[in-house]
Length: 248
Ligand SMILES: NC(=O)c1ccc[n+]([C@@H]2O[C@H](COP(=O)([O-])OP(=O)(O)OC[C@H]3O[C@@H](n4cnc5c(N)ncnc54)[C@H](O)[C@@H]3O)[C@@H](O)[C@H]2O)c1
Image (cartoon, rainbow, N blue to C red; front, side, top):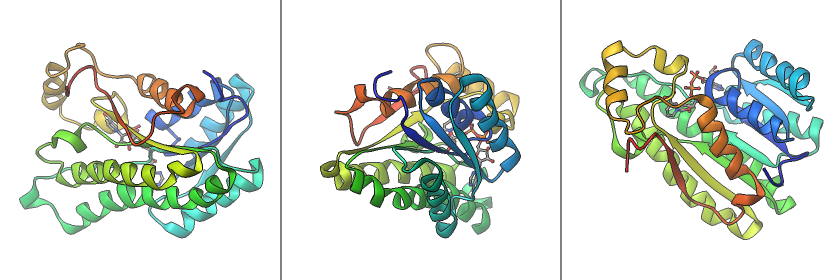
């Protein structure tokens, strides 16, 4: 893909699942990668794999994206090592599913703070230096659940819908400085997150997918790499569904 060689990408939640696949794919396209996660062992594994199998530079950073000072430190450490951040992928995310009438404030707060406030914190932390460099790519991992909703996921759905609104507003603010801001909305992706779902719910999702299979983390990583590349330089403020046709 054009324009990814020697770019510096920061991927949150890069210890496993979709974030790990994104970190590996961006590295395979020639970028150097800061892998951040609350799971430092997992982040180190991803960083090591990048160095060993893809011969790109990488670093692991322990960071909880829901805390703004921690997000600022994460960006500072990346800039200290690589000189700048060209690409930010806001991927860290959690679920705490429950029906509305049973949902405690803690479950609501946890999901909003990691998914939505985390995306805000990290984007704000990179924005100034991207504006100075007059270059940047921000790619947010939303979800089709943020578009169509889902019983039992009011917190998650609200956080992902919030990410979509945040994406569009920040895209408008940063466009004059040559920074694009987009979101992808995966449907059902097989990762640790969805392994936790009951078998019946997983089967139910599969029945809704015209292409007849779940997404792989690599399906998501491919679209993120495209949005990070020069081929996508005229795309901003968009949400691209990666869902096998689940939502049309
Ligand atoms: N799996 C799916 O079907 C699916 C569908 C749509 C969207 N998504 C989104 O994709 C993203 C990745 O999901 P996944 O399926 O790979 O999940 P996952 O649970 O396998 O991975 C999430 C990663 O985020 C990290 N993380 C959690 N809280 C964090 C925090 N506060 N700060 C930093 N890192 C934190 C975890 O340690 C983990 O490594 C999430 O934003 C999720 O909402 C997933």
